[in-house]
Length: 351
Image 1 (tube, helix red, strand yellow):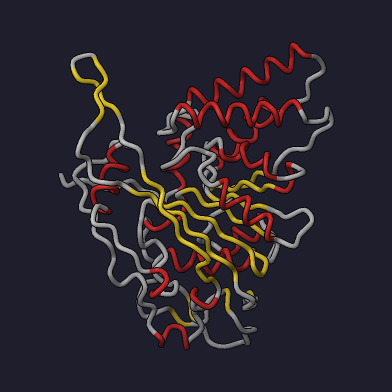
Image 2: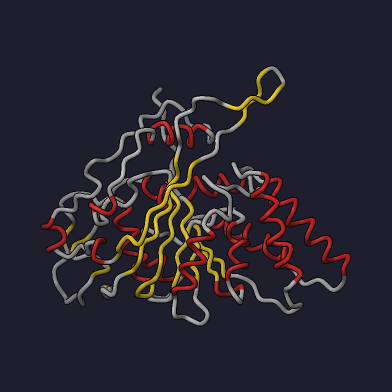
């Protein structure tokens, strides 16, 4: 029987995954890998208390690490497709950051954070774990007894109504995406109504038709996130793909990696998925002009690329006869950080 990729587009897949294992899990990089880009984005924003939207939070410790970057925890909004992941995250935050009255309780909280970071299933280096533990521990001890908590919501990013049930339009100054766009890219293309529910011009009462061909979900994701982002908001995305957002400016954007297929295979093999044909969709960036003319927003008018950065994945050690041996002559493997910036183009929702 041919190998079937995981059903990333099915909520049940994620609920089952997080029900069977609710331990912290990190996709691609450590929770603090995006710190330089977060610091820069928050410094550039004009908002006194900028709101941060963490999409596809899963069970990553990044949710709690984000608290170190803002004044108040309620500035952070964690959303995920899985209700199970959201409930796990909400409970874990209370356990880690609950009010404490004496030094003994403070010590317990520090121990809890240390256990969470050091025990999670991740490719994080030991130094990264220690740094993150220290950061979270210091943050906890600085909290006031009557602290507030982050926001947690379950939402389908590919449904504008689901997203708007959780988020208000034009609200967020920073969007954090730690391989969530990768997961969305693995879901099926879908036919959409034209004119689309979300558009760059007020939508009059016109007959609605179905798109002549399906639309790649990354385009839909970009349109929906533009709806909840403020102008000049930053969308910081960590990805295993060197071409995750092909709708962006091609001369600035285009970059190829000769080892990309090997990287993807290695990444998913760590998840237990093998022998899968990883072919990039060459038509991903081709939205027919006719569809745009008939009411599908062009994502390239909503987002521009502010920067694209490489993160080299460190070589891992493997056991060889009971001893640890560093892999030699391994091709360079890269992860990529994209910093997208929201334009001033307004979007409207069809009633």
